[in-house]
Amino acid sequence: MKRLVLAALLMAAAPATASGVPEAMRGTWAAGSCTSPDALLHVTARSVAKLPAAGPARLVRFRAMREQDGWTLGIGAGAEAPRIMLRPDGAALDLAEPDVKLRDDRLPGATRVTRWTRCSAGSVGPAVLHGEGMAFLGTLERLEAACQGGAVQACINSLVAEADVSGDGALSPAEIARLLRGAAWALALQQGSEPDAIAAAGGLGGIAALAAARLLVASLDYDGDGRLSLAELGWDRLAFPPGTGSAEGQAGTIEALADGAGLLRSLIEQMAVE
Ligand SMILES: [Ca+2]
Image (cartoon, rainbow, N blue to C red):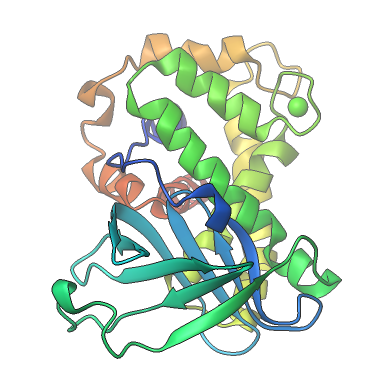
């Protein structure tokens, strides 16, 4: 079961979008000052995370994107297909979050536009609360890109490249737990959590993440050295070859995978109950 879940993780795929958010708009932005922001905005190639100092957070991962009247319009998944509009303005960034009822051809209409300032570094509090999760959003997109083609070796190589903080070419429980904590953060955002709940997700999720990571390592660590090597990760390729075959019986999980942040929640939940 654990290997099946890992295989499902490695098979994670989302529909490709064009070239993503223009690079000049990617990164971390603040409303107010970078050291004491009213809100932070983290923009990756295919997602936007909005992190108010008070109030609910928001994460929109784009399924489709297009240019419209000088804006980059990103459209998220789900029945409501939430929309985010981004526009560079000198050194600043403009953000509009249109109401779901506003017609596409009338965007942004009367939607309020907020102004954001680029931050290369911030204060300790937001960095501790959000840094690992922000990094995970980029990791998730690179994993999806590497894994979309169904080339399992490329997918596994990407997983190791993303997760291997120590650079020894193998994955420790701590390195896997880091990804799972990032997933817990992304999930909290996707659920519109407020800062306290995001912090709690990081704390409680962190404990679950470490337990899940230890189980995962133990389940695949065939030589018993306490880490997962490329060869051990690759062993799953033989047991669970690419394609839908490995997903059969796990349709719920696969659907969750398509939602991005849901992929590691499924992993955590299933690992935690085993
Ligand atoms: Ca390592």
